[in-house]
Image (tube, rainbow, N blue to C red; front, side):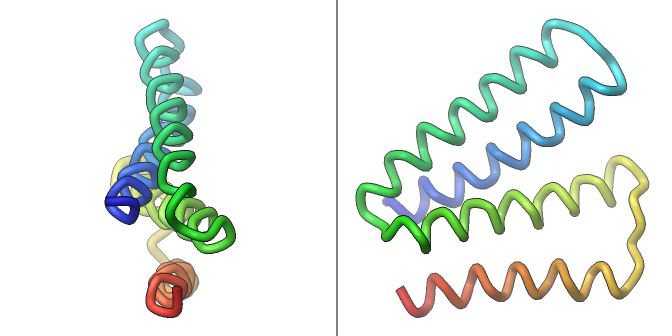
Length: 104
């Protein structure tokens, strides 16, 4: 259950980052509310999962999901670069997060 909540926390962090970008495009109160809910929920779920997962591993995976998710959202929805070098390094971050899960 803790791993599921950690992954969900990372996805909500990605959502929060997307809302930050959306806020720079369109300033309205709905986006601010979604940003606060996204990051607030993410931190609450991270806090829960760290009760059962070592802090270093949990935090690294949470930030890894956020980094990879933010980069992918940027590529898919905001026209950011899809250059192969960028994809290689994003894959390395993802592989490191998976590796931490495997050795924990």
